[in-house]
Structures are given as C-alpha cells and as structure tokens.
Image 1 (cartoon, chains in turn brown, purple):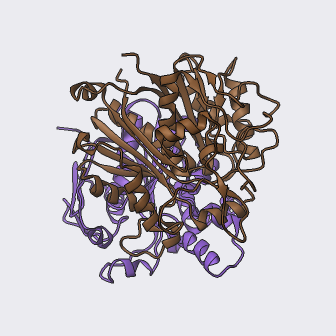
Image 2: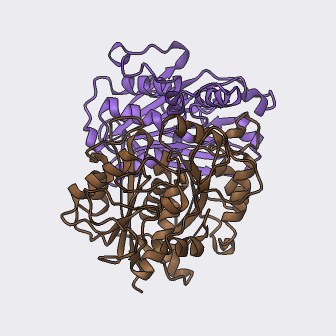
Image 3: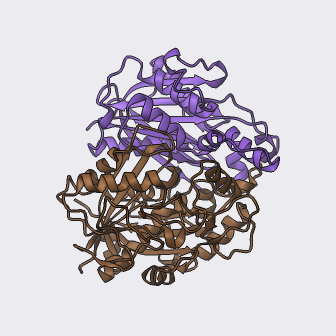
Length: 362
Length: 244
C-alpha cells in the first residue's frame, strides 16, 4: 500500500506566513479585526492586499503573495494541480474573460506555475481544501500522478459576507469556536499549498517528507442544505474511514470549529460518539477566520508544525468550553497523544471530509 | 472491480418538468439544482443502489450562474438579499439536495473545469470504484446559460440550451476500461469559445455536447469501443467494451 507524503507546504493568512501564523496561534493572538462596513457588523481575517474585496485583482495578488515561498523549480512539470476554492473573484462576476471566477482559477494557476499536468478545481464548499488533498492522495495511490500540488484559495468578498450575514451566521466580534457562548463565524481569507507526492518521487528528489497522508474519508450528511446533521452522522463516517474504523491512532484533531452553534455542536457530538476517549482538539478559526475553500489546505499546513513539535495549539477566542467536552484546547496548547492529527472540515450541502496526517519518523 | 456504465440520462432544462414527488423538496431550488435533481431522478429510475456505497460526482463549467448574478444584483441595487438565494449560489448545494433526496451517503463532490468537466469527474468516479471504495457512482454535469456569456466569448460562440448529462457507473453494464484526460494550456478565449472534435467526426461547441453525443450513442447502441476528443485545450480518451 502506497502512503502519499507531503514534501512542501506553506500558507498566507491574516496572521502572516506559516511560521508567523503558527507562532501567533501558540501565543493565542488573533488576526481578526472589525470589518469596515456600515451595514455588516462582524470581524474578519483580512490580509493587507492592495485590491478591492471580492475582485479578480485580489485573487491575483493573493496568488502572488501566497505562493512566494513555493520552490517552483522543484515542481515536476507533469505535476498535477488541484485548486480548492468556493467563489474566486465573485464580486467582479460579469463574465469577462480574465475575471478569475472559481472555475477559472485552475487554468490561471496552471499557466502561472508553468505546469503541464491535469488541473481540476474542487468546489465542495468549506470542505473543498480537504477534498482536494484527498483527491491528491488518490491520484498518488492509483499511480495517476507522481506529484500533485493542492492550492486552497479564497478571498473576502461582499458577496459572501452579505450571504452569511443574511443567514445570521456571522459573529459580531471575533468568533469563539467550541465556546458554550459561541455566536457565529468570522470570515477570513488566505491561500495554502501542499505538495503531495509518491514516496519514491520524494526519495528520488532527496526530499525528506514533512508528513505522511495515512488516511482520509469523505461523506455526505444527506440531510439539510445549510445545516449539518445534528447527530454528526456524516462526520462519524469520515472518522471511521480516515482511521480504518478506529484502528489508526489519532493524536489530536484539528476541528472545523467555525464558532457557529450547530457546526461546533455537531463536531462535539461526533467526537464523543466515535472516540471512546477523544484526543485533544482545537480550531484555528479564532485566529485566522474561516477561509472557506482554502480552510482545509491552510489547516493541513498548520498540522505540520503541530506534528513536528508534538503539540496542538490553544483555541484562540475560546473562553468557556462547551459543557459536553473536556478535550478542547483552551488557554494553552496540549500535547498530542500520538504523532498524528486528524484534520476535518464540513460544509454547505452536508459535505464532510477529513485527512489523517502522521509525523515523518525518518 | 471492473467499472461499467450502467445507465445514462440527460435533460434539457427548457423542457424541465419537476417530478410530482419532488415538487415539495425542490420548491425553493434554483434551475441548476432542480435540473441536477431531476436528471438524477431520471438516471436512477428503476435502479437499486446502496446509498452508503454510492458517490455523487457533480461537475460543471459555470455552476449556478444565474443564481450568482441575482445575488450580485441584490448587492448592487441594495435590495435585501435572500438567504435562500445565497445558499443556492454555492456550487455544492445541488449535490446536497441530490444526496438528501436520493439517500446518497458516500462522497458528494462538486468539481468545476472549463475544459472537460464531465470526463474529469468520470475519471475520479472510476478511480473510486476501482479502489473498491464504492459500488456505484453518479457522474453528472449540469450547465446553465446566460446571454452575458456572449460578452466573454467575444460574441463568436454558439449558445447552448441549459441542461444536464448523467451516467451511473457500477458493477453491471458496458465495461468502461479507460478514461484519460490531458489538458493543455491555451488562451482563455479558446476555452470560452469551446471548439472540440470527437473521433466520430462530431464537432462540439459547448461543454455539454460530448456527454450528449455519448448518451445518444449509448442508447442507440452506436457507441464505438474507442472514443477520443481533441481540442485546443487538450484531449480525452475513453475505452469501452471488450479490450481486444
């Protein structure tokens, strides 16, 4: 059985690059700030980009800034590309040629990076990034590709801010994931990338992998369109698939943890149902906001320093944990119970996805 | 597992009639979602599938375009934005409806692509079946249309009728041995104008056209063993039947 490996990874969030974001999470610092808008009262994880919200130009700037650290010269020209996004430059939607809508970003990035391999875009709502990583793992396991670059990207837009506002899903200040008094989510923006490779490919290139992708699962709740299954049935099936029915050890969980009443409640229910003794879990969204289609890849990237240092960061914003859980990280980071992290996301349409990452022990 | 093409369906959205038993569940849905569900309904008519072992692979070039434009219109005109409208602007919403209505608990994945959305999703579904992760997979491409597309295409493209094409893959039917998609870089306008030719000599001018041709050939038993597509943005190779 082939186990795909992660050889390169990086991100850009409102807290900075990967190292800066990681350090801020350890310090429980948030990058969320009040949105400057008369009618929408919320906080956002906004990156300093010189382009209007929701614009194609903003997507372009984020790509340039977010992929700065990617060693392009090490990318195989035949490397496949998977883009995970939800809305792209949606506020610019007027169907001009170069507006970088979600369905155009894949082709743009392929050309930008000079890649020859297949490029696809996953639009699985907030689970897009994690699904992208799963598809990359499948491509490696089936021999379809030796390396797959997964890029998760989404920007803040008035389209999405207004939409979530109308769904009454936005927190008025910074979100407080897994808190008993949580009131909603805070939107963010960012880009994350992970290069998923066949282990032989990594060895040929003399690259020591940062982590192994040892399990995954995707499921549909087959319930409501915007609300998750209250019993967490879909996420439980993801846990089962990613851990081979519990046979693979999970040292910690990066939860979706948006800060909404229903999402976080569903996740806690699923964790309590599946795990006899749930491992420590946290959410990064109190620090960087909910980056939608990019979330899965950005959070996957943050699992790597977690694995390296053997800890799971505190949950920024959390004050009083939901009474049904004892394992959510609060004010301080907690040690992983095992060198592995399960990273999960759920989204509109009842989609759930999770990946199990393990530390490289070479 | 040998992956086989079990059934096909397609739907012209201008002839769309919502099945009576789905009317209530689709009362708030937009055209894209309604079309996806109705096409799925046609595909699964008379078929027995295990929802826990079935995956849904929805794919599109443009997604729920009209719905997205209506959301933007509400923002620009400062009209109140309907949360239902916003929910339907999300590309994955249609797969959520379909998975709920047909009890599909496996992966419900939505992909977008300009070039060969149907075949990219078909390749994904085929892998999942080959790996034994699923017993059945539904591959469905849906496209809406807006006259605004003409602006982006420089007014040179052929308009198309919005619709959907769907395949059910499983252990029974016509063997599908091989699906290979090779995309090549090309100017954005070439993708928008969409000009492709299949090995049968058929010329294709929109993203649904190839799936429609294959469905016609499947139902009239004129599907060749090998079916290739060539265009400025890449190639597709499919292999059906006995690999002699």
